[in-house]
Image (cartoon, rainbow, N blue to C red; front, top):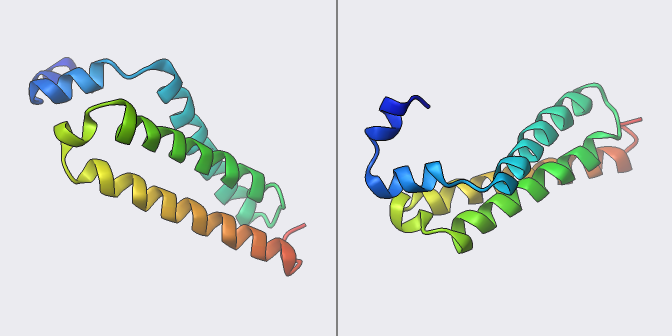
Length: 109
């Protein structure tokens, strides 16, 4: 985000955005790259999709922990701070279940 975009935010949201710990950025990267690579390997019918989706879900859970318990994001952002992590957790769990089922059925090598 540009400085102007950040300055347009309410003060409590600016504080949250400017004080994101390094570990949250690291787990976010695991979340994004794990999900992306997991999807690609699933399309390529590789068993590697399963552990990549596990890494992604770990990232989602770690980030949700930060949002729900370690910051005041819920008071600053409202309901989306609760709902969006739940959506990501649901999708991550579904991708894990899909890849595990595909391995059991022999669809992935």
